[in-house]
Image 1 (tube, rainbow, N blue to C red):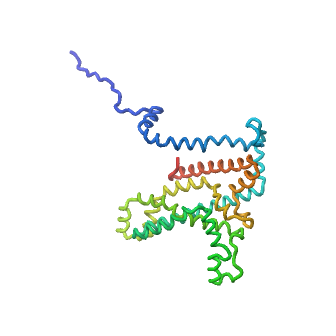
Image 2: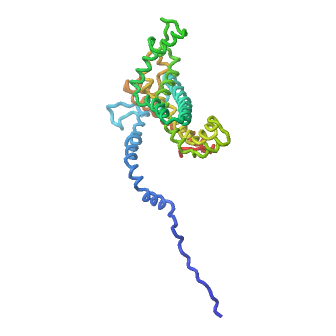
Image 3: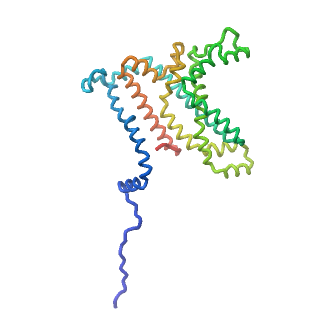
Length: 324
């Protein structure tokens, strides 16, 4: 008796995705339009950000512009030892960290607060006016902005006139704000907030538009007021954006700017206004000590790189949003 056996043939799985390199090139081909669009940016990035890295070798040389690369004298970490043993550099490092921290903390708090308030406005016309007014200072160059700040804070400026009118300061004893070193960090922080607060709210306002309106409706039915809706719906809804921006800004902790310090700084407040960028300009480039300026710039980059990866790792360990 013949047994009825059914012979099955093994078939390859349908639509099996290629793995490894094949999968990468398959996605690359599938998204070729996006890849082509990124080519100009990648070329710019390589040409202006990665190719110049070879210049870091100057930090380890007694660099002389008239000599060729192989004719330079290698001196190891001499410039770094000089930097960390120099009181001026330690002072500008303190100033840089202080101004960056002020900018980071108060910049975040004020931008998020303004974004929350703008999000609560119901009259669209008034909201647009407030946004436009808050955005405008961002488009003013620091040269013009510094002139406005200097005029406002001068002995015959509006701030001193207001203080005299209130009786806080007597006439003839006006305060020279930019001549008191201890005031500079406060002036810098207030100026940066005034100039960038509106621009910094754009990202947060955009993030708020992605929050489901049904959540607000449900909270309103449950009797939540505006403050409670901001606390329990809006802020958690933009939390991931805030964390990512915080990670990125901490990476720039040693980059406190150049224009405001250079334009508002003077001989009287130099102990508090001078930061690493101005140090590089004054004691490196201006004195043709390119090796020293390269060492200072290299220090900034390496520390920023370490901070970025460290904070991103902490965010990942805490289960928060991260860059990579």
